[in-house]
Image 1 (tube, rainbow, N blue to C red):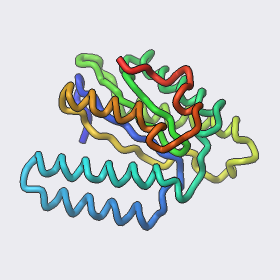
Image 2: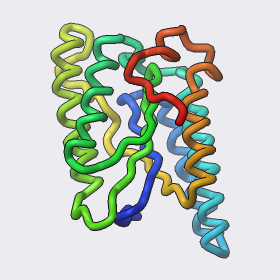
Image 3: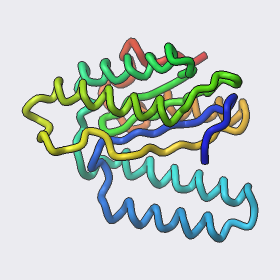
Image 4: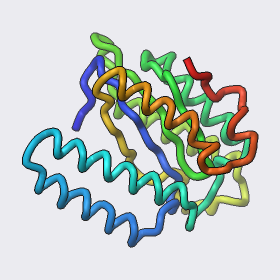
Length: 191
């Protein structure tokens, strides 16, 4: 589904190899089956939200794959690139970096003529290039930094926006991550 201008989405990017392949395939198959069986747009939306919950739980478990975003210099670089999206005209009201993935709320202003997909593609490319430089010797040359693609969930109203923002800002604490995940200077404040 293409985001419309004036729409806000929850974007999730994850590091390559950050969920077990079989678990990812099983979760995707459940999502497809639930969406095909959905008798209404509301049921389709519930299926999409259930997929997100399962997907996020797999990422949070950190059973496989790298945790490069735990490296503060790399996290700072990616946060800076996220904020650069605002210079392209997107609004980034909230984001959180976790060891193997990130979540960001992105608002595509009405009348902007911007392409969310182009912005995310550029974010992928720029951050992967910088990560390779910072991770020299730790990331094999043939390995991808980011998993191809991304997950998006449209935010339907201000109540949902508030719930998602609270979820994101509490995420590091829920996962009992080290204090730096809670207090990095680029982590947005609750508004």
